[in-house]
Length: 504
Ligand code: ADP
Ligand code: MG
Image 1 (cartoon, helix red, strand yellow):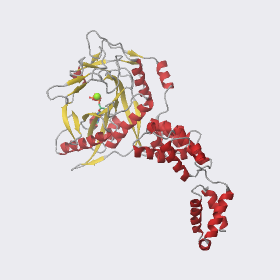
Image 2: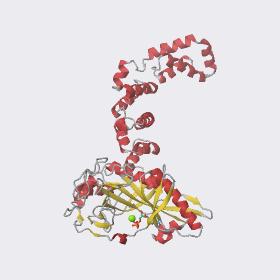
Image 3: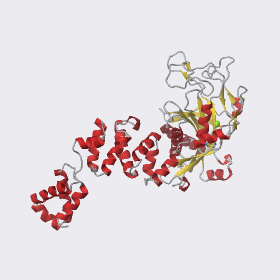
C-alpha cells in the first residue's frame, strides 16, 4: 500500500520584505460543530434555520435550577474524530466553566474543557500535491458549547438574540504551529473537513458556520522555525496574532497574506507585533484589531461543579474504533495501489465522501481506470457544468456501470457510449435496453464490416493507389467505413480489415 510516510514536506512559503526574507508560522483552532440531533447538554434540536428561539431547552436558556446532562452521542463523535486523526483518547476528561459576559450567552459562562480535554495529541497529513504533504501535529480536541447569535442588523435601534445555537456541541481542534503558508492553512482545514465528513462527525458546512477557524499567524526569519522544531521552545517564534472566526477557505488565505505583510512592515520598521485578536474584513481585504489578547486566567476557568468528570471505558472506545469507516488517506492509497489510478485521480475521487462512494459503486467488479475516466471526465465534468452533485446526478452509479459494461462487452464503441451517456442523462433508462431498442449495437459481425470496407475500396480506386504508396492514408478508409456504418462498426475490426485489404 502506498504509504503517506513516503511524502516529502513542502517548502515553507517565503515572503520578501523590504529588508529581508520572512517565513510564516501558522496554528489553527478549528471549531467544528458536532453532527448530532441534540445539543451537548440538552435534548433540544440542533436543526439549522429554524424559527429563532424555537430550539431552546430550559438549561440552554440557563433557567434557575436547570442542570446539564451530557449527550453520550456527542462524546462518541469527539472520540471518533480523535481516532480519525490518530490521536490519544483520554479516558478521563473534565468540563470547565469559561466565564465571560455576552448577551447571547445566558449562563454567563461557556462549558468547555481546558485542563483535561477528551482527545490528546494526534496528526493530520495535509496533501500539497502528489508525493508532497505536511504533517500537522494536533495538540488536542476538546468539547465545548457553542454560544447563541446576536443579530444587530434587523432593526436600527434594537439587537436581537437567537438562542437556537446556544449549547450546540463543538469540537475545538487545536493544531500545533506547524502550518507554513496560506495554501497549507486552507489545505489543512479542507483535510480536517474531509476526515470529519468521512467520519460523519461534522457536516463541514462552512457557510452555515458549522466549521470555522481562528487563525494564529506569526512571522520569523528563515531558520528560526527549525530551531523551534528542535527544541519546542516558542521563544524562537515571533509574536502571533489571532484572526477570529474565519469560515471561508479563500478568506483564510487572504487574511494570512495580509496579516503576514502587516507584521513584516511593523518589524522591519523597528516596531513590535502586539499579541492580539483581530478580525478579517473581506470587503477591505484587511485585518483589524478586535481586542488585546486575553489569557486563560482572564476567564477564571474552574471545573464545572454541575458535571462529574467524564470517564469512558477503553472497551467503548475500541467499539467505536472497530466501526470506523475507511478514511481518505487509506482510500486514496487503495485506489492507487489496488486499482492503478494516478494519485491525482485518486485525490479527485476521494475528495468528497459521496463522490468516493459513487465511484466505488461504479468500479465494483469493473476496470478501475476505465471507471475512473468515466466518473471524472464524463460524469463530474457534466455535473460541474450543470451545477449538480453526485446526489442530484441524473445518471446513477448503476446506470454508468451499465454503460461501461456495454463497452467492455464490445457492444458499443467509446464514441457510441458518449451518445448513450447523453441519452441516459436526459431521458434516463437502462443503458442495455436503450442500446437494444435503438439499434446502437456495434457491428462486430466481420462479414458486414468486410462488406462495408469492400464498398469503400471499390468506390475510391484513386485513394487506394495513394494508400498503397503511403500506408498512413489507411486511416482515411477506416474513417469512411465508420461513417458509413453510423459509428457502429467495431473500430479495431475495421482497422484490421482495411490494412489487410490494402495489402499492408
Ligand atoms: P491560547 O490558549 O492563548 O490561544 P494556545 O497555546 O492554545 O494559546 O495556541 C493557540 C494556537 O496558536 C495554537 O493553534 C498554536 O499552534 C498557535 N500558535 C502558538 N504560537 C504560535 C506562533 N508563534 N505563531 C503562530 N501560531 C502559534
Ligand atoms: Mg486557544
